[in-house]
Image 1 (cartoon, one colour):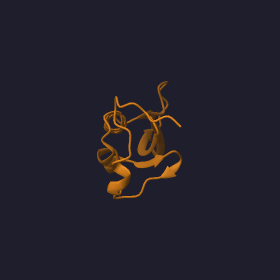
Image 2 (spheres, helix red, strand yellow; image 1 turned 30 degrees about the vertical axis):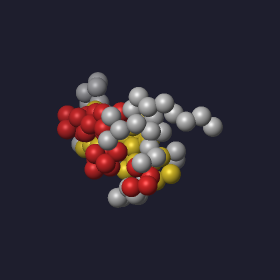
Image 3 (cartoon, rainbow, N blue to C red; image 1 turned 180 degrees about the horizontal axis):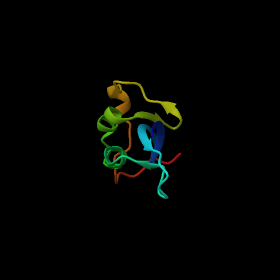
Image 4 (cartoon, rainbow, N blue to C red; image 1 turned 90 degrees about the vertical axis):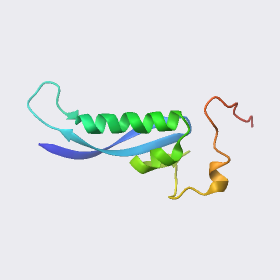
Length: 91
């Protein structure tokens, strides 16, 4: 049996809500993800780590500091997002 569920991926200031399928069975490993959904979670995490918010938004619903991120993301917001490896402003 397969069941739809949402999983959260946290990375930096973002949380991504990713819809996945859990496979239920009598197996000791159950429930488990499909290979495609495990790869999808990895792609979302890698996109956020690399600062590619647009790519992450294609695969998941994004939240910034607990606020939903609208699609498309306004350019003035994109310009203020921290880049990987960039120092964070104090205050």
